[in-house]
Amino acid sequence: MTARFSLHHPDISEDMLINIDGIITENRHKPGSVITVLRECQNVVGYMPMELIDYIAKGLNLSSSEVFGIASFYALFSMTPKGRNIIKVCLGTACYVKGIKESIERIKNSYKVEEGGMSSDRRFSLEAVRCLGACGLAPVMTVNKDTHGGLSADQVIGILDKYN
Image 1: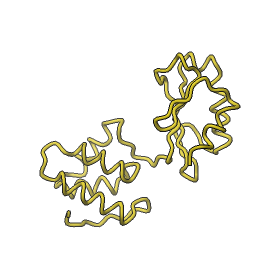
Image 2: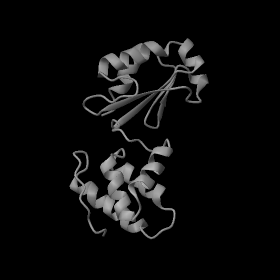
Image 3: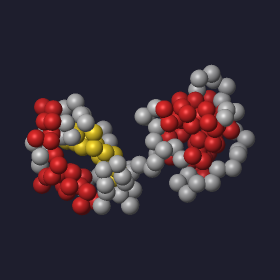
Image 4: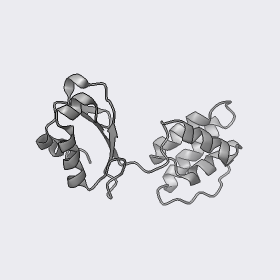
């Protein structure tokens, strides 16, 4: 186990910290393991708060700025909290023409979440993306890894209500 440094953050529980320590210990002496450690720790916490980046840096005997530079460079890593369910709504031409904007408005109003934001209960994060690569299904959204196509604004809330 890693020699524990101080890590206090409201989103990081003691159980999470035990997992994080194991990840750091397992990868500490592997060259080039920073991305692996960041990815696995983000999987545990859900995002990369600055306190976690500092903790990882200490555990890997690296500077915080070096680890932050890597975490902030790659789009894979998020420095802000994400909801339990990530909604990605396509704003590409096919989806836009077929009415996706009304679906987005319904999501925003029903779950009190803005584009790029998270609902107050952390149930959903809403992201507007340029293309999901499913133009034949337009209008389309994904929730986590599930793709929902041929959407109408009337269907969207019923679909999302199935996600806790």
